[in-house]
Amino acid sequence: MEEKNFFGDLLRETLSRSRGEVGGARSSRIAAAAWIARCVGNVDSLGSIKEDLPRLGKVLKIKTMDRGTLVFGEGQNNPGVWILREGIVHLQIGSAKDTEIVGSIRSGGVDGDIATILSMPTAYSAWTVEDCKFYYIEPTDFIDLLDNEPDIARLWMTSVAKRLVSSQSRVVALLGSNIEVQLARLLLSENSNNYISISQGALAAMVGAQRSSVNRALKEFQRRGILEVEYRSIKISNPEMLQSVADL
Image 1 (cartoon, one colour):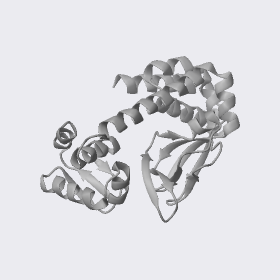
Image 2 (cartoon, rainbow, N blue to C red; image 1 turned 90 degrees about the vertical axis):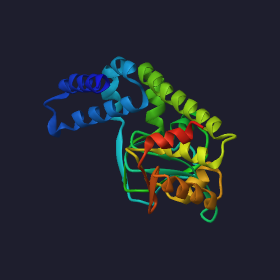
Image 3 (cartoon, helix red, strand yellow; image 1 turned 45 degrees about the vertical axis):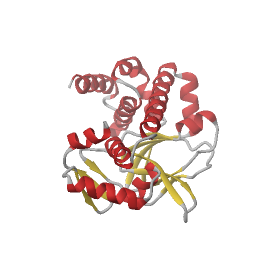
Image 4 (cartoon, rainbow, N blue to C red; image 1 turned 120 degrees about the vertical axis):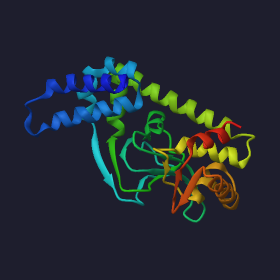
């Protein structure tokens, strides 16, 4: 509750300086910038960048994509920065005939920034699983922000560090565990309001197991009342029991 109030106060204070402009376009951009700042940073850092929100909002572009659209390709240079506002995106490697899903992004997720910062090709492709809405920053605009806005650069480095720690923790957690424990941990990490929009094939690829093994584990979870398997999705019925499996 404190975080929500802090963010609301910050946003109202910042927007109050942009009233009176035609169509409220500036206000909309600042609101989007504040939302992005909250996603990539933390509450303690938001206050320090409120003066920079108009600068961040100025370079934002809105992109909408239908389900099944390529956001950026594997091996693409300087993809720019993609911040997912609505929808789900899968991260994939391999060819169309031999594809493995290595991760997913939901609302508030960020990608493309690390490859853009390092001027290196992307390690995977990104595909929309649902109709999606993105905030997008061109590569040159993003690098210019980092070069000239120290508070925004510090905020973004916080995001990069948090994602790195999360990825390392996930790899360590999956190593040496049986399929049920691995699957429980993955489901919890992908959980959104006790609902996970993902296929069994994608789950199998993400834990590095055979689809038949994942199917058996899911059926066992369902038998125990932990979850319900639906078409290309999973509903968690008992998060506490799922957590107890993940903690083994």
